[in-house]
Image 1 (cartoon, rainbow, N blue to C red):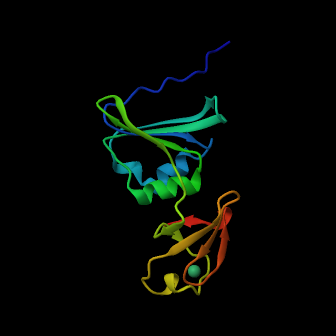
Image 2: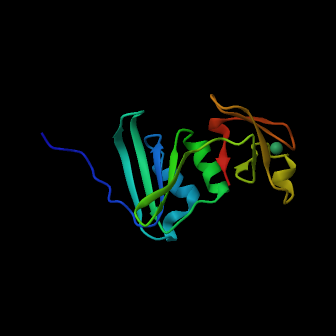
Length: 150
Ligand SMILES: [Zn+2]
């Protein structure tokens, strides 16, 4: 039998995003716009004791902004994030949806003011599982599959 275990090298400084839903690593990469940063390591469909399978992304020399963390949370609500300093985990936390998301999600309603004028989008989280959010401006409800990230 071939040993399919993959070892992902530790990084010296940067951010490790663990417990991503399997198959979401590329989507996360896309919203983070990581194509022009430093070294990025991706592990997809790795075995996870907690969830069966998971994806992992490690990004050297990058710290995530709150906006980026919110986007990851919308894609993969069980992700955990580790800040690595000098090969040590300096801080580790699980992502959590805030009550309000500002500026990360596009409103689905074409008549919404955020799609007509340069008004920042703002959504209230109605339920977390299944995910339902409501536009602050036009009150349109959106489900997870309606969400497109800005
Ligand atoms: Zn709206």
